[in-house]
Amino acid sequence: MLAAVLEAPDRLTLREVPIPEIDDDSALLEVKSVAICGSDVRILHHGNPRVKPPTIIGHEIAGVVTKVGRHVTRIKEGQRIALGADVPCGQCSWCRNGQGNNCATNLAVGYQIPGGFAQYMKLPRVLLEEGPVTPFTDGLSFDEAALAEPLACAINGLELVGMSLGKTVVLIGLGPIGCMMIDLARIMGAVQVIAIQRSALRMEIARAYDADAYVYSSQENIVQRCRELTGGEGPDVVITTCGDVAAHEQAIEMVAHRGFVNLFGGLPKDARPMSLLSNTIHYKECFVTGSHGCVPRQHEAAVRLLENSRVRVKPLITHRFPLAKIDEAFNVMESRQGMKIMVHPN
Image 1: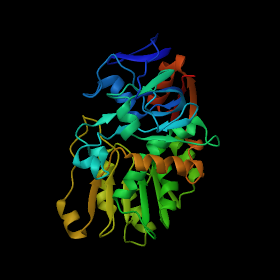
Image 2 (image 1 turned 180 degrees about the horizontal axis):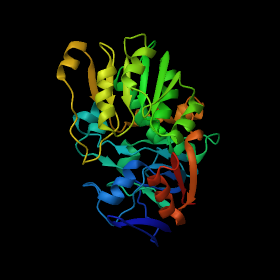
Image 3 (image 1 turned 180 degrees about the vertical axis):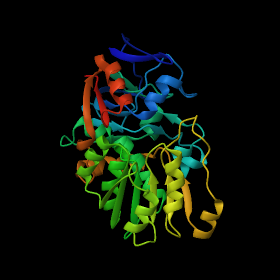
Image 4 (image 1 turned 60 degrees about the vertical axis):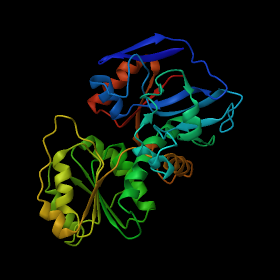
């Protein structure tokens, strides 16, 4: 089969490799669609302790099951399935309590488990028994189903801030996650969604999601503007769906008393330290958290939301490439010319 093999930092090589062999407890997936995530770009250039080259990365995946071992009962040959990234060990206290994205074993597709930038991938026993493996119907495209993984992470982010009926929400950063969260916040009860973005290209794509207000962070004081838009109180919920230290600081400054801030967007290693007055948190009695990844329950919910068109991802898919042009796909991703860049191995 053709695969894009990560051989070393900055070296992603297209080559023929054997199709993975399966045993009685595993299955084989024909990969139809895999999206490039920002974490894939970071792994390519800077590596990751959980990624041991030579290996295959890529974790936003959808495909067709072509072969199953004789002990496998969760999935069947011919099924269309979407995969998530985080795979609980199933044994530790975090996993037993449904919080497997905090598992110390920290298994993940595209990390310790070879991923989707290949024509086929093996679904090992631990993934089939514990992980996010969700069948989906013919009415959902492979490209859309692959994006259940980031949508599940968005679900985790909004659940952690106690999203509920009647809340006002600010999203700082309108990349794919920020746009998904506009739809998601609505169906989770938001009465006002304010969307903030710096670049014009992403702002135009995000306008398809019909937020109540769009604010250019390069042109306005976003703290002041968000307070104005919420009657002077500040928003109940602020999510930083971008990797910017200033946005993290502004989120805490603007949030309402007793409000919630989720520092969702991870920061680069060379980012400056965050600066804030802890008295701001003290006197507001606000809550500051972060979130990462998702659990299988959230991945299944994401697939069902996509199947029922409750969250839209089609507007986010701006580029599609065959696996043979994966270098070009990564270049487009890094240039920020689009939103979700899809790779089609088959």
